[in-house]
Length: 285
Picture 1: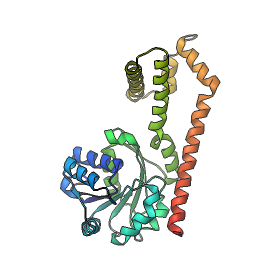
Picture 2 (picture 1 turned 60 degrees about the horizontal axis):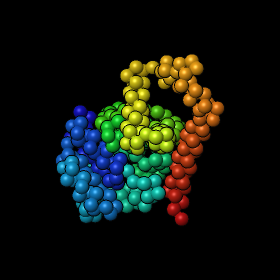
Picture 3 (picture 1 turned 90 degrees about the vertical axis):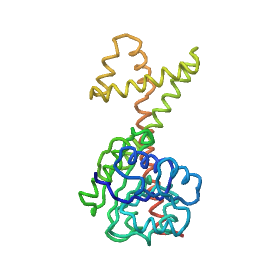
Picture 4 (picture 1 turned 60 degrees about the vertical axis):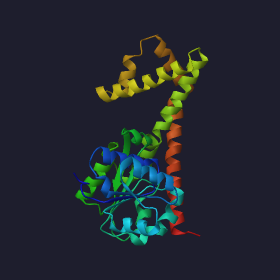
């Protein structure tokens, strides 16, 4: 396995870091004794990760420095607003032969290159929250210095939490718009379905269960058949039937346009965040 014997340090120990840690350990593509976690101040979270997965966690500054120095792979998973301050605290510990993996939304390869040793190979990723249950969708791109073996390491890491798509960096913000934020769109639609079911007389639990199973079944149907969602929709839309009536109303209200507009705004916001990170790094004042 590509990660066998490789030491991996996570800088930032939130939900996405935990998802990756859980995946690589449960899938047995990395060993707990080779996985390390660091965060700024949440000692309770580190203790919980150590208890759940048997990994190493750094509580003292000297431990943190040692973990970063000796790691083969450094995964940065802090919030975008914390990038400059976080890198300022550890960038001098990085080595050009290490692989740096970013799960920070909006953090571009060019900006990362300003923060790490010259020539350090970098992988930029955009996983989504479904990664926490092993059903994530991750977009991924590489800097020029990422060798085939390093690419395989990154792919192994994110295949452990779902499916991976390698895309040009220019499309990473669109990946954010479709899959990075995509689960929230689906939840929003489900919220509306559940609420309307309750308003129509269904018990809350029943409305929720019907909605959840419907969405689960629809997604599984697309996955299992590999058919275009539009074709599956047409198959269940009888002429002059109930489904057609609903679809016609969605179209009259401009649902497709509304969805497109929301995704466009998400992509724009991802670009804005990236621009702000770059500005903070280049001009910290």
